[in-house]
Amino acid sequence: MSEIVILYILCRYDATIYKISKIMDEMFFAFLKPSLGTINPAVKRLVNLGCIEVSDFMSKGGMASKTCSITPFGRKHLKNLLLSLEFTNPAHILNNARIALFCANVLSDEEKEEFKKNIKNHLILFSARTSEALKNPYCGLDEMQIKIVNSKIEEAQKILELV
Image 1 (tube, helix red, strand yellow):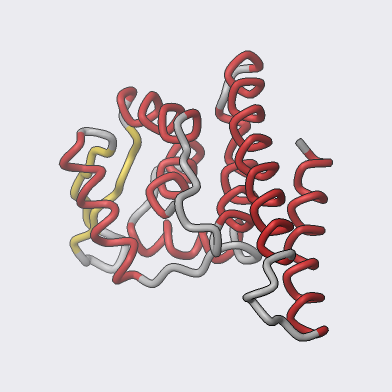
Image 2 (spheres, one colour):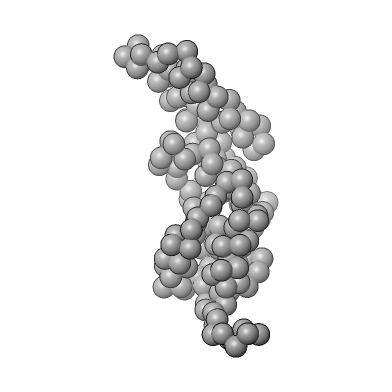
C-alpha cells in the first residue's frame, strides 16, 4: 500500500523522501503512518522499476538533496496497482480499501467503475466470510468478541455505501 500512496503523492507533487513522509502524515493520517524505514525501500523499488526519477539538488542551506518525481510509466503503474488490487490479508482489507478509494481520483471514469467493482467484490466476500465465521460453533466467541467482529462487518458495509 505504501507504493500506491507514494506514487499518488508524486502525481501531485515532486518531493524529497522527507517531504513524502510529511505529506503522508498530513494527507493519510487517518489510514497510514509508515516510517522512513518503510518509505525509503519503497522509493528504491519504484526507482528500480522506472516509476520514479530522482534528481539531485542543493537545498537553500547548502545540503545535497534528492527530489523524486513520477514518470509516465509510474502513473501507468499506479493505475495498474489500483485496478489489480488484491486484498490478501483480511486484517487489513478495510484500511487498504479506504486508502485505495482515497487514491482513486487518478483513474478515468471508466477505470473507476472497474476499480469500484473490484473493491465491492472484496468487501462483500470479506463480509460474507466474517459473518460465516461468527456462526462457527468452534470459535467459542464471547459477547464482546462477537460485537467487535460485527463492528468490522458494519465498517465494510459503510465503505460499500461509499462505493
